[in-house]
Image (tube, rainbow, N blue to C red; front, top):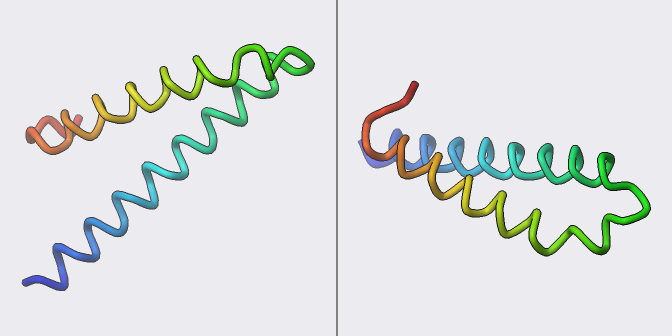
Length: 63
């Protein structure tokens, strides 16, 4: 039982990391030369979005 929970948590962390990386790459491409001006707020926004997504998932609203 513990193993199943651990695997699920690891999988969730991997999916979250991959989502964040993909979104950061998308933003980096969109802002290109001005990425340095935008990186801090984009990263902050995406971390907030990720926390909301994880909270919805934990709350049982998986869809």
